[in-house]
Image (cartoon, rainbow, N blue to C red; front, side, top):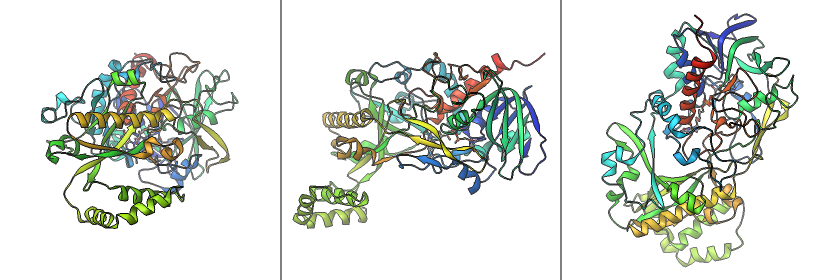
Length: 525
Ligand SMILES: Cc1cc2nc3c(=O)[nH]c(=O)nc-3n(C[C@H](O)[C@H](O)[C@H](O)COP(=O)(O)OP(=O)(O)OC[C@H]3O[C@@H](n4cnc5c(N)ncnc54)[C@H](O)[C@@H]3O)c2cc1C
């Protein structure tokens, strides 16, 4: 059933077995699990069916680093950020779940093997084919992939979803399910808790036109994204001043994103065709990306985080020193800085003007492909000081706005630099070509971190741990100390791996659905 808090008279109180806060990718995946079952579900979605500026503005806040905006890295409407997502899908690696002594705060309390059945079930939600994430499962790729030394490097694999928009794709199913009430324009503004703060007794809900209601349920799941979940918990501070379930001051801490640097590239020695598995994404009817990253053995031996590189674009010439100098100066110009060795760069350019002009010509004339550039995507170091807190300023619904204060770690940059050095070593051994490592990876943290791209992977802010002293949710995604409050989000990731997060978010949401059905909301006889 579809209702709209702005327009429909829904009454002062809605009752259900399950209340899900957030109708994005996680919330919809979970709600679908309950469609046409004996459970009544209220799915609260802050937005409507279309993008709407005043609703999106509820996401405004401060990112102290200023490198990505809190209003363009997530979307507040039915389907959530699937409105813009890229569809890159991959499970986490085995090592990502392990406690690694060289990665502080690492280790999940569940294993990859426990998630694999749910990864398989998550595939069709994103309109992906069978669950196949290793090279041997793709014979046409296996026949042409490089024979990488497994002590150093291994292949990393993504399947590409056709960027399934969950709002469009699943609206009909949610609307038709008689036991589901999808309430649009309904923002959760407070988790009302019992006097002992050990359970949620209701969710306070508001629309931008002033209408309000409450939802009372047997269980509540927060599925409103990795920044909004801690915001809602911290803002629900009527009973406990530091926010709900925040006795150990962990809610909002350990924020992680995946740094995406321009990692460099390769100029191929031989035929471009020999590199086809790495740049051609079409395999039959499916789309995939074959990347490369440090093997688990190399990560252990060299104390690296997990990481990956994948082809980004084509290179049509071998950049000369003069071209490099031109790029450095143009980047410095973009950054409104001026390098101390600018004179040397100017002399390089003037000394080879012919070469620079030829390279500009080749770049824009689309000469033959000589190689490929790479984008990196690396795990980020969990750090309790990277955190979401609340601002004094309030949004149009009276909720405190959010403040994100964080910075990527030196280990993230060094992992990416070492990954490219290993690629250079292996590509040299295999005669693939000459690798250029982007000098930004080798320089200081400030310059590196000022030149990264981000893709709305908001992780870690309600991390999972078996121990309430080191995590916000338990291995079943139940909030420690709360009887009936659960989380479905990348906010529960204790570590991030390098893989884009959504397939893991969906797998965890499906696993939570099974847990709720079996253990929390057994159907009454
Ligand atoms: C440009 C871009 C590209 C991306 N590409 C990829 C990719 O290729 N692969 C990948 O794995 N991931 C990608 N992502 C990340 C991906 O979009 C997220 O991982 C995913 O959307 C998270 O799902 P979610 O349900 O947790 O959050 P969302 O999809 O953001 O959903 C949260 C929902 O909660 C609602 N909500 C918020 N606050 C409230 C409230 N108080 N009350 C009620 N409802 C509320 C919102 O309206 C929204 O519908 C990309 C993100 C961006 C920005």
